[in-house]
Image (tube, rainbow, N blue to C red; front, side, top):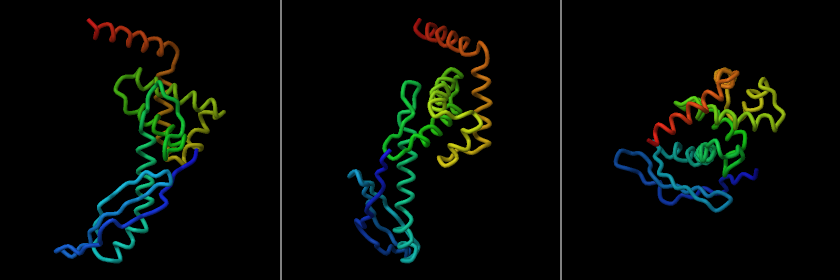
Length: 174
């Protein structure tokens, strides 16, 4: 994946000193691919303003990665890099999305997509936490997700969930 990190931070306006003594202004962050993000910022003093100029590009970059990782998660989409998000960040987003599903079949569908991703990479289940730690997956989080996956994929459960889903769909269509 080719990341398009922020290559320029421009002060659009400011810093203006407000009545309360705070510094206020507008910054624009430009990514290598031409996208821009503007953000209003406040700082208590000029030193804090200068620190924001140094720190905010990383914050904006991380926010872009998170937003891109969460975009388009679904059972019909592959786990690949998207925008600023690496495939590993997207994989973690799939796992977290599965944990947030109310219906077991919806969670299982995302977990199956992740399992395919894992198998293509040749990872064992015990390697997942290590391989995705850099993308923000914690070992305890993976342990909970793995337990959920093992429960949902146990003998007969996928068929039961699929049948229940078909029955629910027919019921909803009446």
